[in-house]
Amino acid sequence: MFFPIGDDQIKGGAYPFFSYTFLVINIVVFLYQVTLSPDELISFFDRFSTVPVYIADGHHYYTLITSMFLHGSIMHLVGNMLFLWVFADNIEANVGNLTFLFFYLMGGIVASLAHVYFNIDSNLPSLGASGAISAVLGAYLIMFPHSRVKVVVFLIIVLRTVTMSALVFLGLWIVIQVFSTLQSLQMVESTGTAWFAHLGGLAFGLLLGLIFKRQADRMTLIG
Image 1: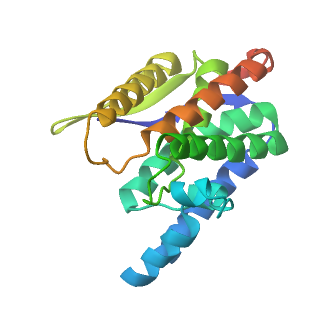
Image 2: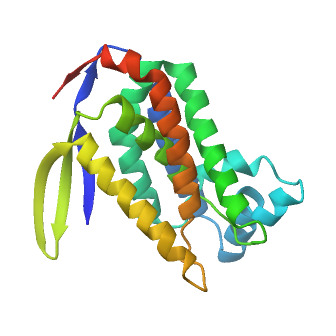
């Protein structure tokens, strides 16, 4: 297992206001979730998560946004927020605050729609920031492929910190997403992870990354 803990930072650019705001919102919502009883939590998820059959029937479109601020467990939250913390700020510094706001929310919406399309008859709630963050990672891969990413690697009980290029780290991440998606297609029961949302967000991020690539090439990265 491996997790990013830092990267090269852009010198100058916009202050990553929305990157940090989204991080705080996700944490606050999760803290609210833990105050709910099991029945209240189920009702909360049913109301604000993306349920494919509801979207297909033309209802609860607002959940395409609200679902990206919900998480099913503390590890789900920590993993997503770690990736958000490491990778989102450089993109926002590069494209500007309002553009990043649009990009992040649209990335999450596109990701949820991808999940709905491939699970059109599902009544299981889908939630989490993973789709929007997948868009962030896709854009980062295109815009800052040579940024150095600090990674914590767990090898059974051995803990090491290594540095690798964003191209290598995010390339490995993409391989895992594609493999996991293909594997999920062979399973009779759902794994509980919306892999198609990850790929939908990633595709959106790669496209937007191409649009902003020239602008990113003019920025200076510092360790």
